[in-house]
Amino acid sequence: MQKLSLSQSIQQRLSPQQIQFIKLLQIPTFELAARIEEELEINPALEEGMEMENEIKERDDFDDDFDDYADDDFGDYADRDLDIESYLHDDYNGYKMQGDGNGDDDDKEMPIAMISSLTDHLISQLGFLRLGEQQETIGKQLIGSIESDGYIRRPLQAVVNDLAFTQGIYTTVEDVEVILKQIQFFDPPGIAARDLQECLLLQLDRKDLSNIIIQYAIKIIEDNFEEFSKKHYDKIQKRLGIDDSYMKQAVQAITKLNPKPGAAEEDGTIIQYLLPDYLLMNNNGKLELSLNSKNAPELRVSHSFHEMLDTYDKSDKNNRIIKETVTFIKQKLDSAKWFIDAIKQRQNTLLRTMNAILDYQKEFFLTGDETKLKPMILKDIATQIEMDISTVSRVASSKSVQTEFGLYPLKYFFSEGIATDSGEDVSSREVKNILKELIDNEPKKNPLSDDKLEKYLNEKGYNIARRTVAKYREQLNIPVARLRKQL
Image 1: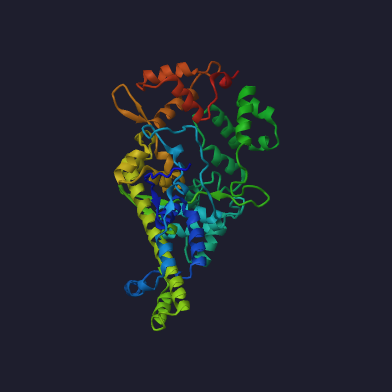
Image 2: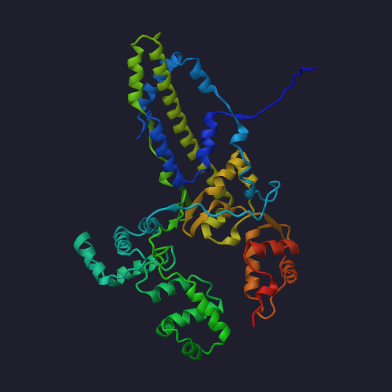
């Protein structure tokens, strides 16, 4: 015998507008353009361009006049709610820090990249040099002279001549070389070199110059490049007076460098570069934050669709075909308005989140000093901007900011806190830097065990356990002591 029973339950549901906002929020900047292009193709009521004030007023008037045209089917469409479980996945688990609940510290994600030209990537970096108009023109001329493999093979005098004939700018080889040296600090390392020797030296100069192996590698390329290119290693070793182990490691360090910084492979594979979502400038101590222009597209609701509604206003309102047509137009108009509102809400959320991070880590953004980073978890930012942790996670998971010190993913600024003897909390990133320094300076024949590393860190005032030392060492991709031992 069947029994009937009643039960009550509460379910959280998201409206179509909320779902659209969530999807738009979590995609990075380079995917946004494709998403907008897709929406423009499927919705004729959405157009590119800035919406004028009179168009906004007309749009509102039309909305009021034609609400009564929407039939029951469209009412169901507009009010339809979807289950939150279909869209709110626990995709921020990897970003949970201390105090955020259960999280997997070992989760690693590759940075999301976009495909762009080498020239675009270099010119975007040129903008951060704050050059004068003439110097910037020289910089663009030099970047335009860089070949696909990343080298500048044209003599600088030829660049000077080009500037005079095509730009009307009269300069000297010395002035051009000053700008070239600045461009050679751009990413990818080794870019804008004039030959292979300079390309390798540019890359070695970005390594740890306190490392004896890197010092020997620089001497090999700088003073013994011809012998190195002919693999006369015995002559180089005798001239530098180094043992077999150091010689082998120095040669390995050199062979790991990229001889073609402008091209991934000879088969023409395009290099992928990170596209920043935010641009941060330090204007005499005042931090100025802005969104990448691709985050702020100019979209508007089609004026022609409003005119179509105006035409149907003069038709037979009881005609079934006319009612169906009006319903279709209304759906497309509402969809266009929802999409534009979602884009604006995305921009607002991105700025609120990044401004909160900027306020929290202001000392770092002013100096670029990693020791200035404060412990910061998702909950800290979520509380400050009065939003859910999942919202902050979606922003942090795939966004990056271009600073004067380089391009940083937002996840970089989140770290757990470590207590010190003085009672202060310091960022785990600071502890990792000290840990790496201890390992770099350890005796190579008798490397430090995790127990000894724990002891040294405790002596420096960091209250840290051995298992945490092991975890940080693994996150730094540093092997255990017995595998670091050298002869």
